[in-house]
Amino acid sequence: MKNDALRRIQFAPSMMCADISRVTETLDIFARGGVEWLHIDVMDGAFVPNMQIGVDYVRQLRGLSDIPLDIHLMTYEPGDKVAWFDPRPGEYVSIHYEATPHPQRVLADIRSRGARPMLALNPATPLDSVEYLMDDIDAVLIMTVNPGYAGQKLIPSTIGKIAELRARLDDRGRTDIAIEVDGNVNALNARDMIAAGADILVLGSSAIFGGGADVGKALTDFRAEITGRG
Image 1 (cartoon, rainbow, N blue to C red):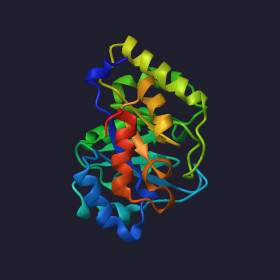
Image 2 (image 1 turned 60 degrees about the vertical axis):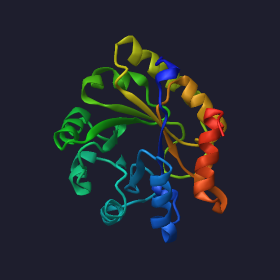
Image 3 (image 1 turned 180 degrees about the horizontal axis):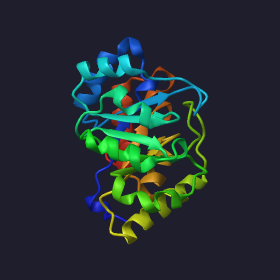
């Protein structure tokens, strides 16, 4: 596992949970608060039973904020859709191992655009899926709930899955591959996720957007709770 003293935990607020009527204010809060990524959930209503952020919304977000995007394609045949979102250099784009028979081809396309390819795994998808893709990715997204809806409860076995993935990556000298986690990332669970080896936390309704919370205060409080510093 990475030396905890050297690790810097990054935040990726889930924009599907943000109040669209206050999105400009929310983006300003994230910029002032040092947020590293904006997590963009793209759903097709088939791979997951929901539909979320589309192309036009992504285009408008880019015009409102300089924070890079973390685009999560929860769609079948993601290779047909990468170009729709015009990924920019340095942005993350994740595809699900389960969603395409040719993950290497899609990951290579993402990298050819200057973006950072990420492989996403559903809770029940074995970690062996990563074994022959390590040279094709910059990060792995571990889903700690079944994707599709906000507000779900953590699947407890996924904490061990994060730890096992971190150990496998470290054993192969791949400390350069980041681990992102998404699903019920409240402060209590986040501490366990970080201890297991997570690098990037997707912050949704369990972390900073729930119950009409003041997003700025919620972000500050969340950071303090997971670091133990006020």
